[in-house]
Length: 470
Image (cartoon, rainbow, N blue to C red; front, side, top):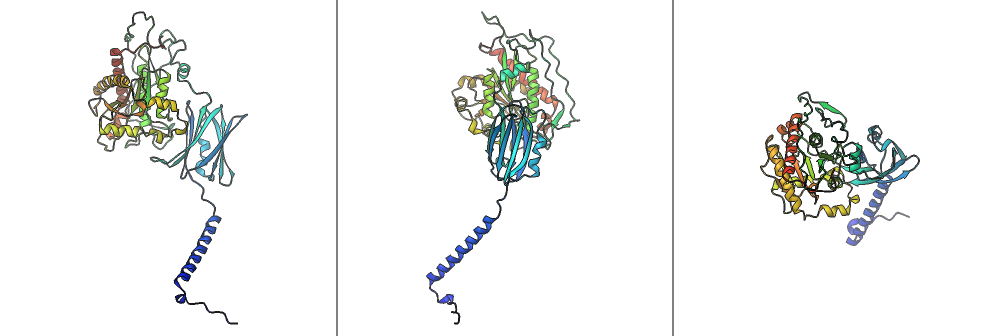
């Protein structure tokens, strides 16, 4: 029987033709789905691994090209942290994590990396002590892609006062260190080396163009201590909280020569600490003493835990125009920024937690309510006084960006009970000022000016009595 010839398409009705097209499209779509379903899912790519060891905590960062899902658990005897990362194949970049664990890491002994099963990589951290891990992800921001973060905290939170006692910076009996108590070794000044932009923080490049600055000589006649009030038999100690901005994942502003703000301000803060502690009845707490990140609210909380009399945040920021220059001093504002530039700078500084990688899920709600209580008129008034004193002294050794203290809503200045200032030592985005910031001599001058301003403020505004008398 002869085959029935196909019906010409032009003789079919419009509805019939439409039904045939839909049938063909459905069949084609089903075929494509079956093809793609049979292909293996593309594994995420690890772009970089970084480790930031510190006494406060150790952070491990895996930067990748997509959002990763990880599960973790603790294994006892011996202590281990096990992390399984899904959607990942082992690659050479991830393997370099093994060599990045330093022998002096307070919490990690070593790490092992392997392909646990298809599309799942397992990390095993052999630990030196019990830890409280925080594992979280961060979305892309700035120059960073997706990040998977492991923060390894000690099971018992570090007490800043206990840490200072251990370092010999806060005597157990309250005796001013270096007076009746045995003197502690002097804190050495930073050397004339800077961290290279593309090298780990431990590797430095010599700066032959910068002469080393000798340690400052101690005053032959120490300045007199604060006068005793009637009925007060003991001398009042002053505690200064110094806050070197940025750190760890957050490099801060980058200069034309590749210098990083976080390195420069840490060096200045250490010089400043040395100079403050030369004076009787004064001691210093650093919010960070190494290259690691501290979220903005935690910086303030550290100062409050040591009952600080003053909070000084040190920065060396950048502006959109490289011609911007000069040092500045900022305090908190209740009514908005004093200028558009101050507002821009505050907004930029307040994004540090996004760049540095704060775990917002672990934020202390009580602390947040305290920090954002803006009924701090007395604090702002005192901050203005110390800010003016410091700005006057800085104006004697450097060009000022503006001749008065500026105000803006800096999160790091929101301690309601501590006078707080933020010092922009110079613009790292200005090539000429970047060179000065890298110079030991200028770092020493700016530190000395800040000390003089602090001393001038307390001479005219003696702090109220607290339970911290010695």
